Length: 254
Image (cartoon, rainbow, N blue to C red; front, side, top):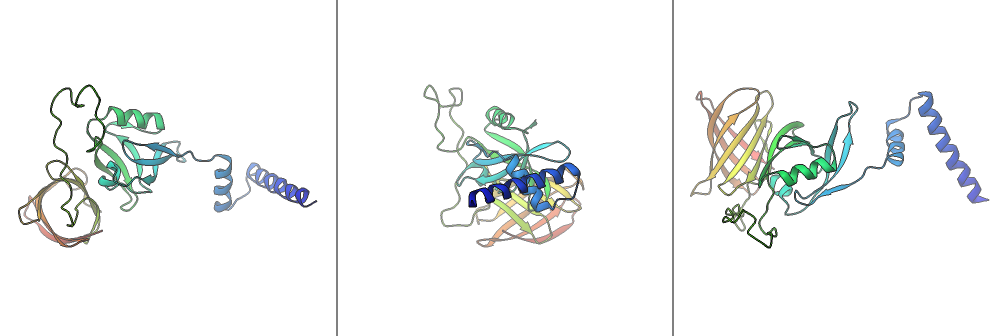
């Protein structure tokens, strides 16, 4: 008897929701999301070379993007500062909107690939460089994986016990800076509201601080140089001077 009552209630709920959707009557967003989730479950895909798990999301205009659901510890994605909730649209110049296109683009990419990412924190598109062929990755048995040539040296590891520049930082001037380690130092991407996005190249100095140059590629067309100095584990004191001589001091925090 109880099973029959439960079955009738379930059928009545499904009938009500179907009739409501077909008739155009307003359905609360929470209920609509639950119905959509039950009818069309999202498939969780994995990309082992990048080190992320993601779903393919279709927006109202029909365009599809990859939304990150998990970032593996120690992966290229983690070292580059990718986070749960970020969206991926491109690998190099390839639009990735499915598992097949994402895998193909990653496999065809060079050792260091540029990803086009929607940063959930700055709420803006940014370019992020990932070192895809990580240290410790198995090499082919018939060679060293570099057409018989000596493999390039790996990126330098963080100073043991010391602060690490890698990842996303928020600026006291508003906006964000994201740094990625390379075998020569760090590359960075800066996003500042009303100013635009800039590419950065950083080099570590003997005193432990960093010098950097930048080139703005959107918004205000500008370039310049500056310095970064750790004043705590999650705090950096910085200064920047533009090519026109304008100087500004700022603080970066995680």
